[in-house]
Length: 486
Ligand code: NAD
Image 1 (cartoon, rainbow, N blue to C red):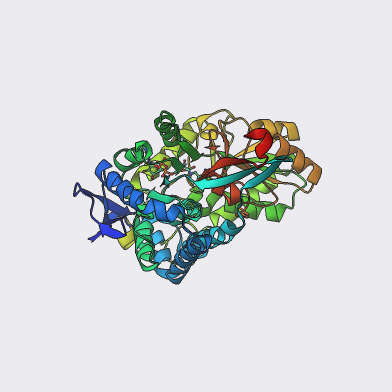
Image 2 (cartoon, rainbow, N blue to C red):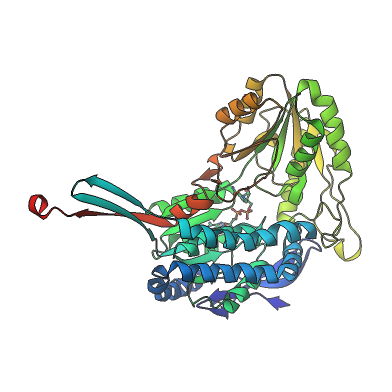
């Protein structure tokens, strides 16, 4: 069975404790590789290596960093097909998604930050006639990144790219549930001649490898994406050491449909927002709020389209719904389906697992599921489920829609479908989310701030927001009036 290794000091290494965990493919439910169960000792080794590399990389020229980031972007682009298949086998997402979203975007993350770093600058303040302030933005030193399983290479590189671009040595811990593309990426780093220690990739569980990364005194900042519960624990661990922390966490995003929307576009957009990646994107809209006048027609069309989504072998180009990432997560989503029934929900579509044939018979597949008639405050409408399961809720007025939309503890994103632009802007003003889409979903410009409000996030990624996170401003005040100030 293939053994995944850590990438430390430019080398591929087994974990020092010699322990490995099974890596299960959700397509089959069978272990197909082994992932290091790394520990504090491996984190120490990575920090030691980063310490050695830090002085040089912190002071590297923009041209040098740009060149390295470009090489990483090219390395990923050249490996598009093997990386896409590896992501699909490890995560369960349809190959069409890995090919057109995950892997291209992972390459673009490096390209984007290679470009934007050259226009990232400090400030300058002319204080009075004889004094000037220059504010420089310095790298933090060594930073830690922790990423989740839903968009494995995409979200890991979204953190590594700005961290490296700003001159930080970086230690990353990918999700132990989907380690394969991070492992393949280490080989791309070796081929890109990344100096030893500039980037280290340590595999393992949250408690065994993630926590020691967060608490290591040599790590100056933690950029985390994952669940709200883990984000909270990380924030508590880091706060005693006054570390910078950026937290991208869970969501329970509303999709708000008004009577005056372009119905066909709204249905198609909602379908994507509901079931893309089996509903396992933090931005997926799991609560669909529909104005009463259009409710019956919208419901009918959404069910028709969702019923046609093909749950099948994720390696098949035509598959639209793949596997749920793990047995644990499959059980969680199925448990939520049962709970929705107990809470009085009326099942409109799905609500069951899907048994595929032959080698896929042990895989984790769930049919797209739609409920209605659930109480607004029930657990199904309040808790993040993170699977192919949505609820429909009717509303009458704009005010009511905003009230329902804001009723959860989460505040990541929202999408509004209406032809009334003044109304959409009023809602955008009042909605408590970090991201608002109007007549679209998941349209991204990498320069814009990305992150959530309330329990969905602290801090923002993207463009200069990400670059600022990985740097610290230092002000240098120069007096050039010797007479009066000496
Ligand atoms: P998770 O919180 O279980 O794990 C995320 C990462 O944190 C993994 O690498 C894990 O090993 C690590 N981890 C776990 N416990 C840790 C600890 N005590 N110390 C340090 N690290 C620890 O999340 P997940 O199940 O992998 O991902 C799904 C969640 O991620 C969902 O809640 C989803 O909404 C969220 N998510 C958010 C965004 C966003 O941008 N806001 C994007 C993608 C996913």
